[in-house]
Every structure is written in C-alpha cells, then in structure tokens.
Length: 167
Image (cartoon, rainbow, N blue to C red; front, side, top):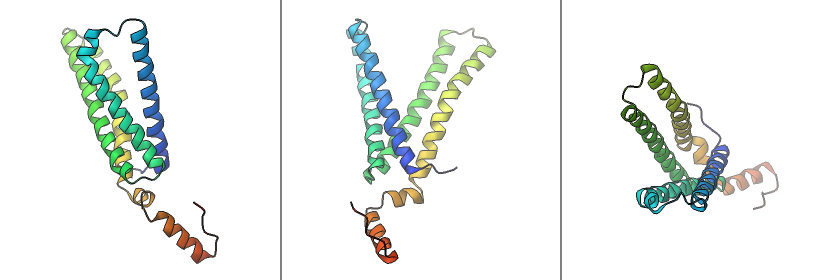
C-alpha cells in the first residue's frame, strides 16, 4: 500500500472534519429554526449527535496536530481513523439490514444496486483510512513527529556550512 504525504493527511483530515462539523451544525440549526428538531428527536438521538460531534472534533484536533508536528496527533489520528472505519462499516451494514427489513420483497437487482451504492461510499473511506494508518506507522511519520527534528536540521545545516534555520 503506498504511503501518503503526512502534510496532506493533516490538511485533509482537518478540512474534512471542519466541513462535516460546519455542515452538521448548519443542518441542526436549520432543523431547530424550522421546528423540526423536536424534543422526541433530541431524546432519541441527542446523545448520538453529541458523540458524532465529539468524534469529528477529535479528527479536527488530530489533523491540526499533524500539521503542527505534535507527536500526540499521530496516535490520535490513527484512533480517529479506526473509529471512522467502524462507524462507516456499521452505518453501511445498518442501511442494508434496514432495507431488507423495510422492503422484504426487494428484487435481487434492486438489493444489489443498493449494496453497490453503499460500497461506493464505504470502500473509499476504509481504504483511505487504512492508507493513513499505514502512513502514520511508517518512516516518514517517524521523521515528521521526531521531537529532535529541528536539532537534526540545524546540525545538518551547520555541517554543510549553511546558515541555521530560524524558528
């Protein structure tokens, strides 16, 4: 599996998390303003919404941490990817189970088309998260998150006769 750029991973997960949080917040505000965010909905799914917001905040923090070379962000982003894999697979499985339950006499062709639709979303997310986990465990990540990184660069510049890098 090819490794991804660490900087790309940081920006990608930061941007995606920010977009998901913004769109999700806008949707909740719209439901609230139009009166469709009832007390029954909040009782039934309020905790789920809070957990999803927390998960995406973890993704945002992890992505930002990767951008700024914080060593804690490496394991946090890997954790976020594992959680995202589990959530996406469970969501796809639940949708397919509900389809079979709600439409018991669904044709094989319609079921197959629905399955393809779910897989078109699930597979890219799982594969991208797997590539991210693979990259976070690789040599480029070790170098990226190395706390002595600036020292080693300064020493390399001193050895080459170049001016030391300014912080």
